[in-house]
Structures are given as structure tokens and as C-alpha cells.
Image 1 (cartoon, each protein chain N blue to C red):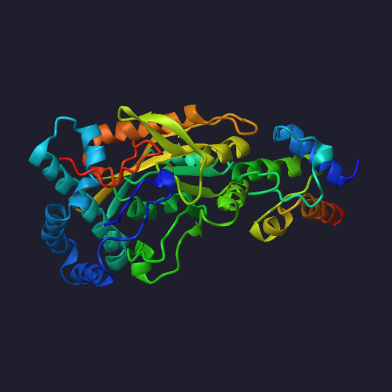
Image 2 (tube, chains in turn brown, purple; image 1 turned 45 degrees about the vertical axis):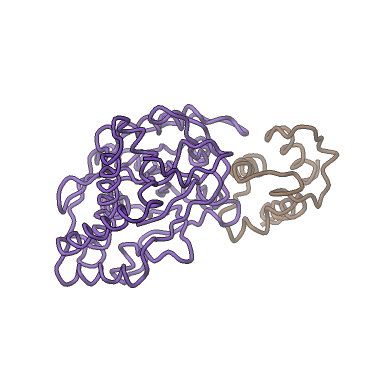
Length: 84
Length: 314
């Protein structure tokens, strides 16, 4: 399973997203505010989930802001960090 | 004195009633005659505001009516004066710490060993404070924890109140996290706790665009208090120390550990009402013990859909 697909599955299953399946989430879906409409508390959970499932830590805002935009940006961040 | 409207609609503000010039007079008086000189000027200033500014006076009433339901008529007005004067003294004390140095105020930490033990768990520590006593000045007593402190703090562009370190002209000893920042500053707060450091948050008001509030019982009515910090505690395992300050003498304050809250791991958007209620209970105990040191000058109990700001009935 590629990073984007795994991310979508985690989002739906662990953040309890209702009325949406992993397949329905687009790669460029905005994560917060609009799109998936996640909020700041979901962000806390998401940061922890990323660390738990991918072993990648989002350490600060410098890293977090660009990474936590869309599925693609977050998946790229995870892949880059994982490869580093 | 800070103005405050209903935060549930994001309308409260930290902006001061007085002008920059008026604040400067107090700062000058502190330099010239010390705390007592500034206190002396407080009486006519607070008296003028309470007598002639109905809107200012009325901001005290929601709390006073809950805490002292027997107060009516002029006694309610006198209560507004007393409460506003106490806030004025708290702001003077904060300025005194900055202008004359930390030795000008003697903060005593009650529960020091317990606080140290919480910090040494190395899961991060959330200090949950409230708008009581001299919360700003008393924070200067936390050096013994020997860990960096970050504070969630919202300041308005027109706010002329200075924090104690601004008077001293030194660099802010805390890292300030703005709740209006990206994702309400939650990623920054999480990072602070993951590093085992200290995060200080206000537990009694919703800040910025934060809509994460739980309805809890406080002084006989329902109020909405923020629960984001409890989510952070649940995620990281950090304990929450409810730390409230109160004035104990002309130049002394106590900073007391009123409660330790342990939030079990919860996933998703689980309601944190029982945890927030624990904080509200501690705050209510504070109000019973120190009734004239509670400084939320807005109607915390107003239903969200109503506009409670100018409730002028005496």
C-alpha cells in the first residue's frame, strides 16, 4: 500500500470520519478548515498517528505547516523523512 | 483594566479601557512612589469608572450575582467597585514586578514539591491557570521548575497593558504561542509537551477561533470552557496542574496547586466534559476561598445565542 492510500485509510478509520471512504478522498483534498474539514484537535491526533504508523515526527510549525495541507503534501513529507 | 465580552462568540478582547497615557501615569507613580502611590491613585480612577461608566460597572455583575446572590442595589455597585479595585491592584502588582524587579513581590508556591514531581515525570506539564489573582506576576515564580515555559496567549493590537517583562525591558522569558496561529497553535503546543517542557494555558476562556468548548457547571450555572488542553494531555500523557494565584498581602501572592488532572487516552473527538468539570470544580473552590480575586468581567453564563454584554440591571 502506498503512503497516500495508507494515510487515507488511517484518516477514515482512526479519526472516525463519517460518510467518506478512503477511495473517495482525493490526493489534493485540503485537510483542515475546508475539504475534509478536520480541526485543530484532529491535527494533534494526526501528528501522533503519523508518528505511530510511519515513524515520522512532525517536530515544529516549520515542518508542520507545509506538510499538513493536503494528502499529497503530507505523504511527500512522510516519504522524504522516511527516506532520510 | 481589561475589557471583556462574551468569548463564546469571540468578542471579548484583551484591549484596555485606559489609554496608553493613563497607563504611563501609573508606571511613573510606581517608579516615583512605589506600589502604595499607584494604589492610591487606583481608588479615584476605579471609583470614577464604576460610578460613571455603567457598562464597566455592569461587567462585574454576572459573577457577583452568582457568587453573592444576596447583593442588590448599591451593595451590588459597591461589589463592582471592590472587584474592579482588586483587578486594578493586580495590574499594578504586575507592573511592580517588571519595574522594581521580582524582589518587589514575594510569590509563595503552595504545592511546590508536587509540582516538581509532575515536571519530573518528563511527559511535559500543562499548567492550567485562570484569570484570577495576579496570574501574570505569579508566573515569575516558576523558575524552580527549571524547564522552558511556553504560554498560549492572545494579545490585541490595541492592548496597552504591559506584561511584567516588558516593563523590565528584557526578553520575554516565555515562548508565546498565539491561538490565532496555524491550527490554533496546537502543533506548537504538542511539540512543547513532547519535549518534556511546560505549557501554560488559560482554562477559563475560549481564545481565538477555538470552538472546542465543553459545557460544565460553574457557580450554579452552565459555562463553556475550552478542552483543547485536555486533548493534548490525553495524547501525550502530560499531567495538568491547576495552578491558581491569589493575593495574600500588600506585596505577597500565593501560587497554589489546586488540582492535578490526569486525562486518560481518548481517541477522536471524545468529549472531555468530565475533565473540564474537574477544573471548573477547582475554580469554584477558589472562588469560595478568594471571592474578590476572580477577574472574568463578562457573562460566562449567557447562552451562546444571546448578547449579554450590557446587562445593566442593578
